Each structure stands twice: as structure tokens, then as C-alpha cells.
Image (cartoon, rainbow, N blue to C red; front, side, top):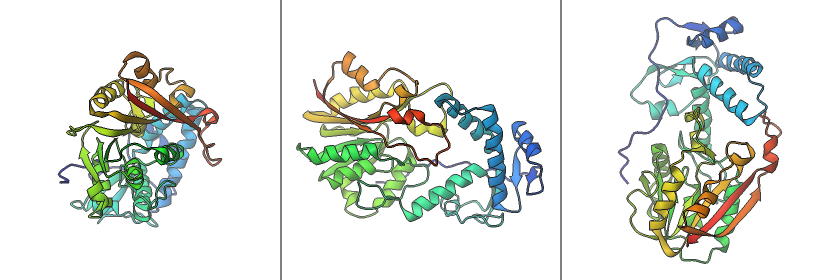
Length: 355
């Protein structure tokens, strides 16, 4: 496919003539006050100085946000996001100029036309992690080969729902001519479908980075002939009916303070009604709709409503064949968030057919 699309990437910041600096001799408390006063701060000397400042900022904010409830965790992350992105570092010739900084290939790949600019330090951390994942690849238990997620593309860090889908695919006895993967992200579900014998998979996503990343990953291999991608929402220009529609939607409802920090896991109120309306038209008479979901919103008191249950009870378009559930593995002991609610979290695989 032609890739005449603009990818999402952090906006570089022009060099500033006057800006406060932070190094190992600077007072941390005074620097944090500058950040709270909406003043940018430039990291100088060593890369580690940026890490020290961000650690101090987290300690400062934890006194303000106890971080006990899911809502407090979200408020803490939002405030940290705002303040930490005022911490800047300088890029010159696609490299960080501070000492002992990591090599990050994204600077050259994403900003080939720029040579000297500033960049928020948390974004630098994100680019660094992303580059390591992209370069080294990530092993996914349900796939034979590693994936190499492109910058700004969602990929899972837990695999319970993927394992649930893989078990279902092993039992699936229907036709395997084609399938549609809505919001394919890093392409894992599409790759699972091909791995289990589907001849053709049509994938859509509203994230241009997902399109660019999976297209680059497939290259000119056989996968590029089995998986066809479109930069669009829901079903896009795909007009044919299909035997299988797969959708792994966001798991939490959008709120007033939702923003780009967790965009991959929040859904607006139109998403599910629009999906089910379109799915009804695109599904063959004997076809199946597969939705991968979670009880996360319910156990964190975000909402009592379940969008799939609402569809089945009120709209009359689909019937439930079966709902498979799997208890989510306990959060890592290394996590610093209070995640007591993880003990009751389950992932869900819903199998629907025409009513």
C-alpha cells in the first residue's frame, strides 16, 4: 500500500535563548518550583541529571496524590505528565549532547530534516525504550517470531487476552477465507489469524504509526500479501462480507480528563454502537464477531455499564454464542502502583453471531 500519511511524533522544540538549567549542583526544590510555574528547565552535563530531577518530581507529587485509588493514580500521572514535559534536553546532529546519553535512532528516522532542537526528557525516555523494542524485538508467547513495534504503536505487555484468543482459534472450525481485524495496533491479532490459516486479513487502524510500522515489518514477505492494511476507523472502505470480525477495543470509558497519555485504552460513547452497526452489515450469515475485552472498568469503578452486554440486551443485532473468561496474572511485585484490584481482573473473549 502507498504510505502517503503523516505519522504521529512528538513536536521538537526550537532552541531557546533564555532557559533555566539543571545540573548536579542545582537545587532540586527550586527547580520543581520553576516547573510548577510553567517554566521550562534544560538538563545539562549528564543524562543522569534528568533522571534525578524526574525522580525528585515523582517524590514531590506523591505527597500531593496518595496514589491509593485508580482515580488518584490517573490524577498523579496527568500532573506528572504536565510537569515532567517541561524538563528538556538538547539534540544536536540527531544525538543528545549531554554526556553518557543513550543512542536513539528515532531522532534520525523521525526528524531527518532537523539537526538542532530541544526535546522533553520524558519523551526522550519513551523514544529510548521504543528504539530498544524496535531494534531488538519483543517476544509474544502466541507468535512464532518477535514483533518490532514502531514508535507510537500500542503493543501489549500482558498476554492473557492473546492466549485466550489463541485457544479459541485452535478450536475454530469455520471458514478461513478472510477476516477483518479492527484497530490492529502492532498487528498481533492479524499475525495470529494468518498463523492459524486465514488466507487474507484486512486490518484497519486510526493510528498512522501502526500502518507504517506493520507495513515496514512485513516488507515484501508473504505476510504483505496476506495482510492488507487501511488507515481508517472501523471498517473503512472494506465492502465485502466476511466470516470473522475481530476487535480488541479500548477497555475503559473516556472521561473528561482523558488525554493522550492512555489513549489506547479509553473508548468514547460512540465507538461500540458504531462498531456493532457496521459489523452487522459486514458479517456473513454464518460468521462470527470476536471481541477481546476486560472487566477492568467495573472493578475500578469507572462504570457499571458493559458495552457488549448493553448491545446484546438492547439492540437485538447479535446473539451471544459464548463468553470465555481468564483471570489476569498478578501484577509484578516490582510495580509501584497500588493494584489491589488486579486480584479480581479478568479478560473476556466474546463470541457473537447474527440474531
